[in-house]
Image (cartoon, rainbow, N blue to C red):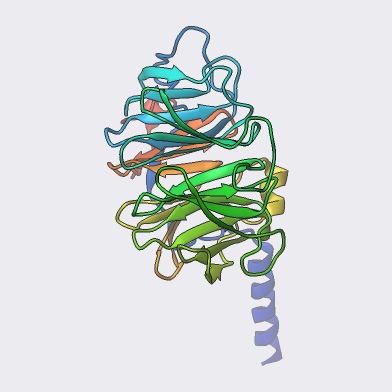
Length: 328
């Protein structure tokens, strides 16, 4: 008996000594990727243009892709068709530091500028329709922001701004831009925030806020009443909820990993909205996530890339075609 126990202990020690890959939460999401959307396989942007850090990305009802980026070698907001062909751009000299980008149901383009403390609304061709906040002035009243991060739209047209790096609050506006209310303060308790970095609203009007540095998502009713929180999803950079209430996030294990790796080593996760259960995951760097109507996932990455993830998992190696441009 002692000999058998010794052999068993030896076998267990060998297993523990071997390195093993951990599984993907909820199972592996089987997508392929184009790591330089808008620049490969063909770069159709004006000569000399190149992405800097890509802060955010969004798609409109036609499948066009809007990229909000911080580099000096291109306009801050660049629009491509679904295949990555350049269409138009705007915004040179308008923004202190591009951050958030969302497109509403009418294809209006909304951005947050966390350098100049403003939220702006444009038509899809770049005509400015609305500006909230005072350029260059940080504040906490009903007319100012302090480094706002994101925008989300309620079913009735009202909208929310996560405000953000300087403040620790959520601000609610009517659909025409009238201040309605705000909630939140710095801290770790319910309704308190340490960098509310992303915000999303489901079809019932429930509000989801990525409380990034607290490694959680807090969930509220339409007027800021705390309902519950999810603490198992790590340091969530960005939340996207599709019109049919399908939730996707780009996240990191925790806020220290996120800061240390500068948004590398992240994961895309598909989340069950009712329970918070992880339905699937896959690795991706990223700061922002959006899902087009055709199911393609776009990631805005501070590495200076837009990633397009699309169905097409390989069932064998590429052989002699390895290294060629990916299939679409």
